Length: 491
Image 1 (spheres, helix red, strand yellow):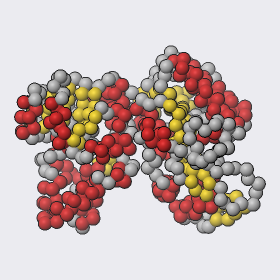
Image 2 (cartoon, rainbow, N blue to C red; image 1 turned 180 degrees about the vertical axis):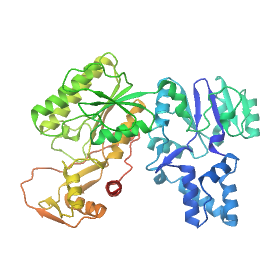
Image 3 (tube, rainbow, N blue to C red; image 1 turned 120 degrees about the horizontal axis):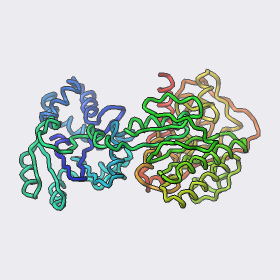
Image 4 (cartoon, rainbow, N blue to C red; image 1 turned 90 degrees about the vertical axis):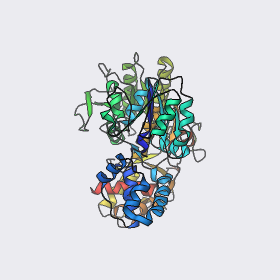
């Protein structure tokens, strides 16, 4: 039976399944059939044919028996191993609109229950990795469904299933139970039942949540804005003169260095606009005073704020990896301005009661990044066919984080958390090793050292707090991120 086919909907209680999670823009169920057929050398009948068989109530065992006969049991076991492997879900994401819908339902106080025929622990981990677990009340497996339903008698529930026995069980438990046949949208009675995650965006459409992204024309901001549009949010962005061209984003002409008025009412602000240089006056004007102007514009509305700070607030590390309670002694104007902005946000939150999250990143990298820091400079050299030049022995180490993981961390902040978090991978790499990895990914031509005075230091963050509180786990190792970066650069 399809995971979609057993659903419950009450006045504010939604039961969903996990089948409509995407990996590489493909639904996991469909992807698992493709990979299974490819692994065993079986002709794949096509997604449409598989979908039709699923609609008809065919199980995976039924389908593989039809496709492969005696090999079916072996294939089913292989597929089960595949879909219960956590690594498979490493880069999973919800279908378009799902995150915004769950955010809106959660904000409204609705109860959200995940129904899955998978192991509950795996289901929770998948939800955690896709950044949805914070919206969910509980995870119920098929075996637990009857017991869970029995505990819900006080709610006005409607139970939907294509299994007559389950309908009978639900009826005996005191529910309005209906035997459903696909397609569900042809139901003759008025229900807000959600038959799969495609439809959940329709539930939230009446109250679509909105966000503001500052710095949306920049490196991380552009990636985040696209992700938020994909996830179904109404996305606003500030541009000083020329608006960006990201599809689905509404641009407001505003200059953060000036008093602001007329900004859109939003549920959350992602503040990424920043001056990355070391000119003290610019750091103060943009990173501190500009942030103050933005917060002042929202004094009376107090939306949640997710502030992109920097590991530069720590200064020279006293020990590695650096935890959030490390002393804050920035030694650059940029780091000083980021720390001042953090203090500004804390004061504003105390005054307004707003939820705030501060992220201190390791060194982000990825497509669209200007060659102003070491990794994109190395990439530029590799693409130009020049030997990658590092300083001195190349033994200095640094920690890098792929932009998609930075985006994922920002999306996790929508689950209602608050606090200050390091966001990194825990993976230190020397400059000499980095040159080799960049050359491998981008087809570069060797490396060379250059003797220069260099007072830079080793850097690595401890992101355990983000893992514990947010469920954050980097999806990309440095080698994997560079490979993805190179692939997108060549497109």
